[in-house]
Amino acid sequence: MFLSIELAYLIGGIPFSVLVGKIFFGKDVRKEGSGNAGATNTMRVLGKRAGFAVLILDIAKGMFAVSLSYYFGNISTASEDFIVYQLALGLSAAVGHIYPIYLWFKGGKGVATLFGVILAVFPKAAIVCTAVFLVTVLFSRYVSLSSILAGITFPLSIIFMLNYSSKMIIVFSLLIPILIIYTHRQNIQRLLIGTENKFTFKNKR
Image (cartoon, rainbow, N blue to C red; front, side, top):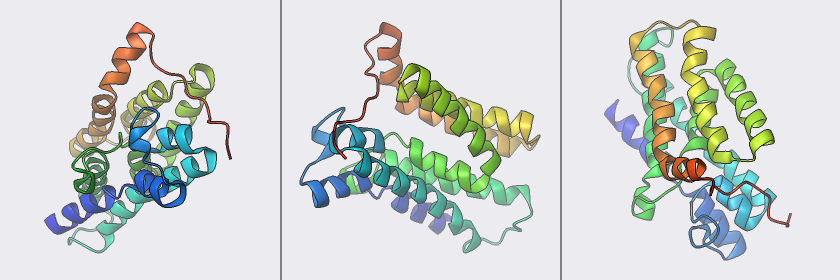
């Protein structure tokens, strides 16, 4: 089981934004825009197609990490312990994305990878989180605020919509918005003083 957690971390750490930028554009997204190695900054720096490609790949990292639960461990897939195991794998992948060993532990903010985890484990909750994200970004154009609110929505949907009462599932679900808030702590400061950048696509395909 511990091997699968480590493997999930290594999968999550694959820096698709940096790879796409260097291989296809000859650019390092960490040196332009916000300097963040994630999908949003990739869209800003390299354009829509590259950004969406990185977004899909980062989401896939979370989903693939969760899928390791079917090949490691000896837990009944019908048990709540299995869900906790899946969330642990997903969180490990997110930590890998945020602190990737391949980039000297300086990665992205983990939102897309965490969304992949939610999509794989709780698809109904993923729909609700997506709706919250899209509505917020539509009216505010702040990706950071949208990500934070979508993250907070996740444990609420687990408790009140899907009616989960397992303490461990609730604890692990709470770790997701906590992690998102932590990685966006500088964005929160900028939001509070009104200096946070609003999202716009770079004018290229």
